[in-house]
Length: 96
Image 1 (cartoon, helix red, strand yellow):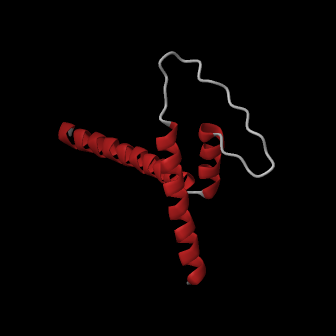
Image 2: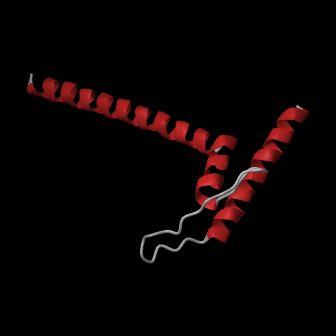
């Protein structure tokens, strides 16, 4: 009887673990989709790189953390690469 109970408990533990992994997978997939969206790239461009739309003004405040230097040019380059990839995908979709 004891062996059966151990097997049942182990099965329940595995099923609970599977549920947790499935939930984590869904969360990660939604984050991936969000970060591939145009709106997300626009948000990053506005908040981190001080991009603006025509007619808007950007107000930037210096980083107050000591020694917290960011490589803005690298961030800009990465953002533009992602943006151009998204535009290519959009053009491909419209061609189909």
